[in-house]
Length: 410
Image 1 (cartoon, rainbow, N blue to C red):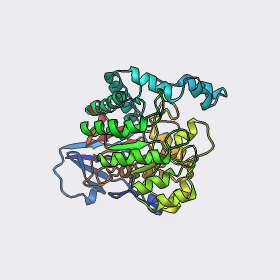
Image 2 (cartoon, one colour; image 1 turned 135 degrees about the horizontal axis):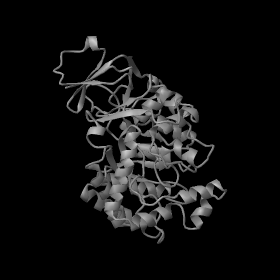
Image 3 (tube, rainbow, N blue to C red; image 1 turned 120 degrees about the horizontal axis):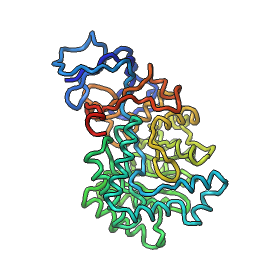
Image 4 (cartoon, rainbow, N blue to C red; image 1 turned 180 degrees about the vertical axis):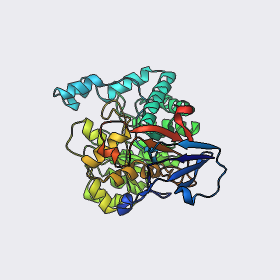
């Protein structure tokens, strides 16, 4: 067993399911506590004087670090090739997303690059991004396809996630997002191909736990998104939903009706959508990095969602076009400074509630006996520094499954 001692503070949400409302602020904060790890799991968290007798074989000096749970990033698009930094620069100079897309940019640019890349290259890309994520404190991350938009290229992305997962420092959770956009070859028959060919092939190879759809004006209608996700449910996949990002398409209410794991983005969610999520088990997954990166003044209404009782999580939306970051720390900072969440709410949203949206809250997302020993040691005297001391990486060391990543995977 390993003893982690000389901690300045341990700060964690508690529970084996997502939490709502005022409970999001109820962190368990212990000063001068110790952590005991038995194999891959936490065995004890608390004062050393109250610690049961353990057969301690390793004694690790945390040097007055603060321990928090490993971040759970529950919305990313990391199996892509090619960057879009020139498009970003064009936006800075005044061009609109529509103008860039009309010239062949946008998602179409990522589709071309990803189609041209080999599975081996995509695997390397996923690993590179996972390593960067881990350095910023992430221990579990969802990863979506959606830049292939053919049967073979969607499968290629998902196979790359599976191949990367074998050596990734970050635990990877795959999602099929074939319903991300329509192929450049045209819209005709694409929904049918997803339903009749892609989802069956994904299910046959067991390549994805979740399936997602982008319900938005100009992309998939509410009916098309529902058709895709019901077909995914029939194939044993759990639905997620890009919902109400650019306009109110009643995506949040659809997610609630389907019992989806999450409704993501939500910058244009309606009052009815807020109520629907507040009364459901579907997580409101907020991605403030996207609003920030697109220079938008419109963020998801985090305060209203929390007050209505929704389970709120936070994610990076790491992708080459609208949120090119692997850092959950900056996401927490944006959540508090732009969406008016408290630091406690944002930490819960970035850990336990993210785990809940991945259906893993019984295993990860908090520092509690019996759960997997995923945690981060911060160079900080308290968890408040995650937002207070902004713009720097406070992570000293990351542990996953009871081992420091510096000595195992990273």
